[in-house]
Length: 158
Figure 1 (tube, rainbow, N blue to C red):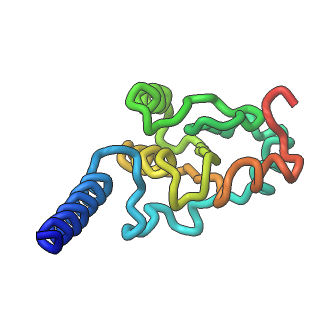
Figure 2 (cartoon, helix red, strand yellow):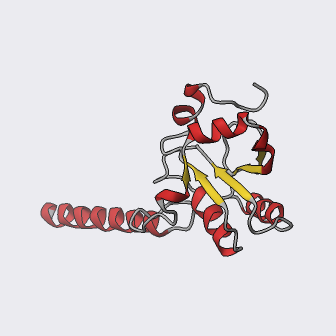
Figure 3 (tube, rainbow, N blue to C red):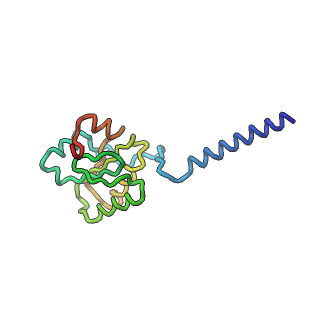
């Protein structure tokens, strides 16, 4: 009898763990699928040093920078907030609406490594979907602090 209850308990435990693990993996949310390739190419990435140099140049006012994450604003960036949030995504789309399709745009998040970021893919794909032709993703492959702030590149208010 003891063996029966022990076997039943083990089976129930395994079944419960499997159920909850599969529910966590399939639940909706902002998880990023690692099995899909990135929607951008290497040529669509902008290096932080290049953007920092552009910000310091007089022609920088022709460049639109969108902060589509929950991090500090780079100097000159329009703060949208995390576009994984539906309201912020709508704000981003509304900001893009009146712009010519060849507008020079840079988007960035910098909350975490690209492989985990819930914001860059939706924003990047929306730019493609809307037909923009001159946009880049700032190459903050680790995060804003590592790839921008720690290098002394310009932040808003600084």
